[in-house]
Length: 340
Length: 183
Image 1 (tube, rainbow over the protein chains, first blue to last red):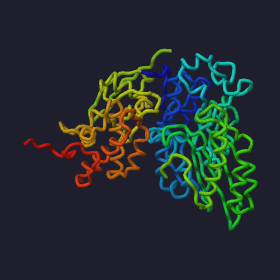
Image 2: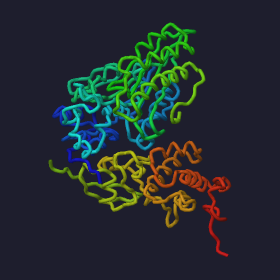
Image 3: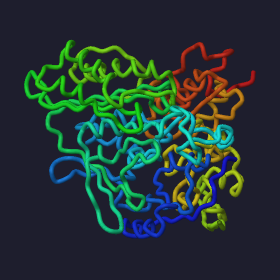
Image 4: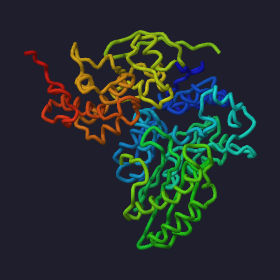
């Protein structure tokens, strides 16, 4: 048996109680909801904690409700399965349901939560291994080691941000709420992430992510595509999300985001600039896709499945596919099928 | 650090089991080591293989990634609870009849994932079955017989014995799920 290390366990029933418990010793405390990321990490001793606080017993953190402005607010401990099967999500935010339904396997989605997917630990070939394997290379800088084995001359860690709900929620302009003992703050989801494999969240250790909010639908079209080796279980090695608002023939506003290409979700600034004010057709799609591959941050390294060069090439194909789906153009299947 | 121990009653397969365990123990460990139900298998224990699948409140989840302490007051179902009296559950008989197990290590998890699917969708299409079993690995069978057995088990459960699986799965002249009558 691969056992969890010993820790103290708390099951608070209100957010106040949880923030108070968390504030006692935030550095050595971890929060858990579904446990599908934390427990494997703790079993392999990647992540350690003296105290674990479960958020499952807090009723106000679960569920999906409509907000006063017509959008949706999703509680942080709402399971991925509940989001993927929610009728309001399916009707107005279908690409989010597609993205959420592509995460791991149905068994994991029955426990795993949206908050956990947003705060998912960054991943790397040299990190997500068992303890003996990691000890044999004297660990890496994400743990107690000295260097980054992916880029040995690099001063920083390049572990990959792999949350599949992240690009589509960023593209939709989602907001999150972080609550601590001292109060709550709201920020755009995109500002939760930092471009560093070790310190990858701007959330303070004493804060709890309580909610993610989607703006009211306003005639946008959206699409999500994901690349991985198998059609289930595997973490994605590339996810692409686009949300576009088109008044008439031309694009008023568009957001294209990449996931699993670096330590942070990447906004395709050049591709977006190239599409604004233009119709989405074969030519503009080809241009935007080529720009996405050359964009800053979109340079996969050799620290996940598949060759980095090939993954870089696939950025172009996947951005094109996402834009084609968004524009209602015919497209070919590039990857394992995910249920929609 | 000292172990924090927990005493509670877990509801497993419709029966109460009084257990004492350390709070950092998973449901898988408690089911196998405290309750004594070893039908639920341990594989990767990291959420990648699905052999430890059980139903909690009717939903198929991985018992290696659930703390037992969080399962208090919830309805847990393992492969030992599948049988209806002395009769095999239709999924079990379909798996046996169609030879959908080879080494059998993944079978308990697959049976529970399939039961979770059939509770939500009594007539799943092949795509639905593939999707629902997407978290369960089998290294022996190649999956075809497993998929056929789930469909056949679903047909027996619906009482729809006319919708047979494709003829290539029959070996000999016995129709799976039907009673064998000795001459």
